[in-house]
Length: 65
Picture 1 (cartoon, rainbow, N blue to C red):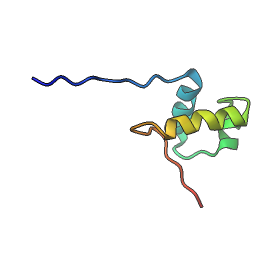
Picture 2: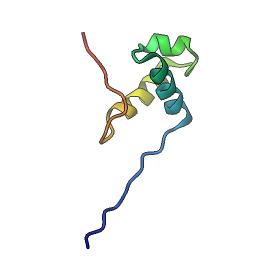
Picture 3: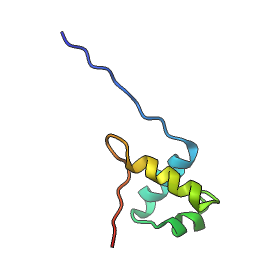
Picture 4: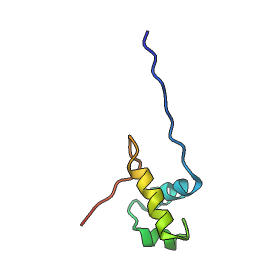
């Protein structure tokens, strides 16, 4: 019998806040997340969002216009 290893991604508290805000509003920009008080610094917020986007199974997607 072949066993599979399960690897779980852990969320930081700020990533959890991002996902909760997106669950409520679905589409948000970085300035809108800052206004909601998810984080105080846009550079740190963008870093957290990019980590969520580049997982094996991403939790967050982005749209470019």
